[in-house]
Length: 229
Image (cartoon, rainbow, N blue to C red; front, side):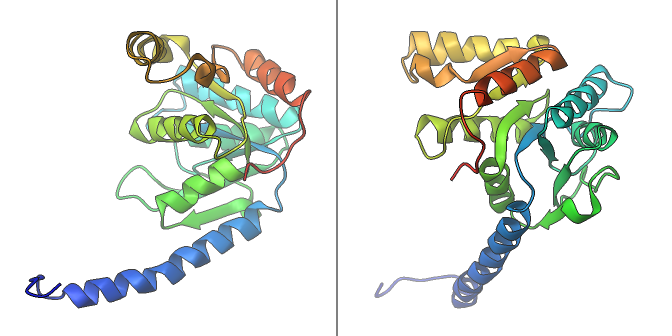
């Protein structure tokens, strides 16, 4: 606009933003081409800080092993903690073990249990998140931090707004998740009517690996397996 004043270097920033589109496009193509070959998978989310001796690491490993034995592959964020446990369980079960890696200033490094041809590296969180949603037949959400909550609420939002097909969202660990779910039901739903009751239909709160498999199998006994866009 006439008389509008911009900081020094503004035009260079705008030019760099435009060229970034090609890098973003390339990352989407890279993800689509690789993920479309993998087959039906379940994504497992949770804290990168969980140690191998902790209960939820061991439970995640058990869940992932049973998931691949049920015929699905496992997708994780490719890093340590719960992600490593998910890939380890899939590896031990002889199934597909996928890692969608991203470079972070802390916590993130590839774990050794990802299939060599299924370890994908991303620069953009939003591209990586699309891959999780597009190629997952369900989310298994273990205890975690902000990143885990981000993935959980994004999936719930996309299903609520009919941007993707419904799939099971399974929260594992009632001690961890009960407070959040009580708040969602009592504050968001009952007290303020900010969501509808049907928005919660596909969210399950469980504590065992057998419950996870029962929910996945019950859902897909009634529907086919396909990407979600």
